[in-house]
Length: 162
Image (tube, rainbow, N blue to C red):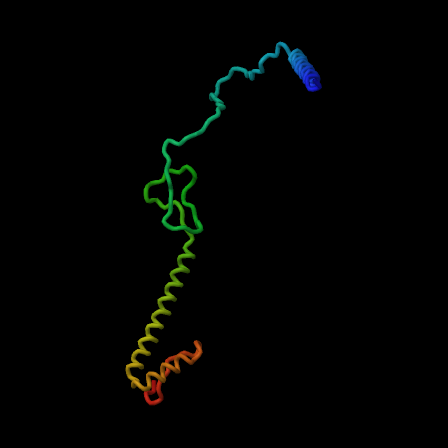
């Protein structure tokens, strides 16, 4: 029975809140200006260019969409065209800084020179091993394995003068 009294009380509070909100809305509506005229921009008649202003919402879509890509990547050194410029197929539109590629070329040339030196060293050792007798090959191989890496130079037998 106590729950019925609470629900009846709550119902009257809600009804009073709705009526109060309706009355407040009616008062605000009545206080607004009754005859508000629209605000027009006017000007005197004269000769001149016609300017039209359009305001709109929406999305602008291009007529033709073009994807531009490069074969290499890097830092752009110079841009040779402007925004919205007409370009043709094969036209250079930007130059990439060549210093990174020049460094790669220099590094590759150094690698080639190092590989050629290693090849010459290996060929010299091959000729030396062919010239040394079997008993001396074992000794020469052992000496090379025992030497520290910095001191590994072509070992020559004293009688050969290499």
